[in-house]
Every structure is written in C-alpha cells, then in structure tokens.
Image (cartoon, rainbow, N blue to C red):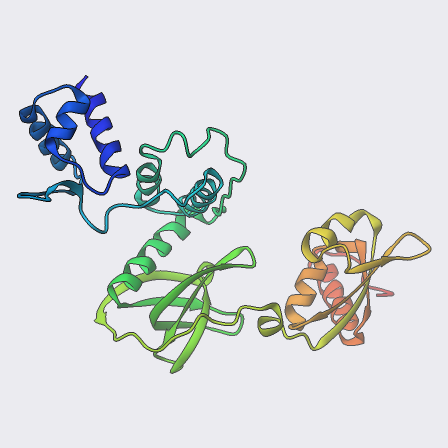
Length: 307
C-alpha cells in the first residue's frame, strides 16, 4: 500500500507545479504525518523534492528536474524514446536506460505498449566502441582533452584533441575536434582510434560550429566511374547507392555510373564483387584491377598468362 501511495504522490508532483501536505493527505486518505514520512522516503530515493513553508508554499519537485508533458503527444514520446534507445544500444553505462525510465514514470496514458521504431546503433565493434564513446562524452562534458593513436590509410600517429562533437554518419561514429598537432579541426573515425584516454588538461571552448557533413563536402567526387555489374548484385547497388545509380543493358547487366573520390577506396570496393563487375572507366582503374589480379594469381599459385 505504501509503495502504491508513493507512486501516486510522485505522479501528482509530476503533473502539478505545487501541492500541499493537507491536499495530499485528503487525496490519499492518510494523516499529514504519514505524508511527511512519504515525502522523506521519496527524497531518500533520490527524488529532488522541495518543501516551501509559509503562506503560498507547498511541496514540489525542484526546478530543473521536471518536464511538462502537456504539449507532448503519444507520438512525440515514442520518438523521444526511440532516440534514447538508439543511444542506449551503444552506451557503456546505464544512463540512457535510467533516463527512459524517468520519462516513462506516470506516462502509461502517453506511451503505448507497442513501439513502431526500433534503432540499434551497435555493431560488431560494440565491445571497443562503447568505452570510446563514454570516454569522449565525459571529456566533452568536462572540457578535458583526449589522446589516442590514430590509424589512417597513409600513416599511424599519436593525437591530442579537444573533443567537441560525437557524430553518427555513413553507418559509423566520428569525433569532430581541434587537433593540437594539425592546429585545425579534424574529423576522426572512432573505429580507427585506439587507446583513447581522457587527459588532465582542461581546454577553453573555441568558437566551433557543426562540421559540414554533406556528401558533396566529404565526398567531392573527381573520378568519373562506369562499371558493368552482373544482375545478381542489383541488391547491393540498391542498398549502397539507391535505385537511380544504374541502368539495365540489353544483355541484362547493370551499367553503374557515379563520381568517386578516392582511387584506393574505389578499387577496394570493386574487388568485393569479384567477377560480378567489369570496370569500363577510368582506364587507370581498369589497369590497377588487372595488376591486382595478376599479383593475386601469383600469391595463390595460378597461371597469369593472358592476363
């Protein structure tokens, strides 16, 4: 009975700006002394309740700990919870799950039992990714610099960075921060970061804006590509580039055309299709693929004559 009454009192406090002990005593049919003990129990449970004595005073949840739900619909709350669940899927702590429980408190009429959107941001890197995200989040909040070893296609290096934004884009997590080595803002891919540590160095926040993450900015193109694909890989082209990236030819193959930024990435991507792809343009890429196949045949003991 006491537990049900405590939940009821909490629900009243969440819905009203202010109430009084006599009002609560009358509503729950108990004495004012019992209400006082209940308020003390809620405070001990971590609910930040404030009691204001005198005329015009009463009992309320402290400012900054309430959320007025009167303007939030059931759909609004479902979208908020979907976003929190997505962050909880890569979190290394219980923060987001606890926050969801707070939002659900007293909201049975607002939140339906069926969720229409479920987002899971985790991947096979979760065991290493979650600690990185937690370390970076803490460093951003406390304005502490972080250090890590970074692996790029051209080199490996030790970096010290002022962290500003954690970004999820192109199915991966990135850090946007000021690199003390490069003296400029840089975008770092978390999967290429190792031994991420929060340092003792506190930094003053710079004037920083959200980076331009448009495809045109990050992938400016420059390499015009034409490739013939086997019809059996249509699903991959649809998944990775959408339905407008190819045209069906008379023999049933798919003529793919796009602008690519990096030749190395192009070749790496193309090789994943094996013999299901034939690159037509640029000629340089075609020659690189042929040379790569010759080297692979040598490694595996095949005959390279005629290649």
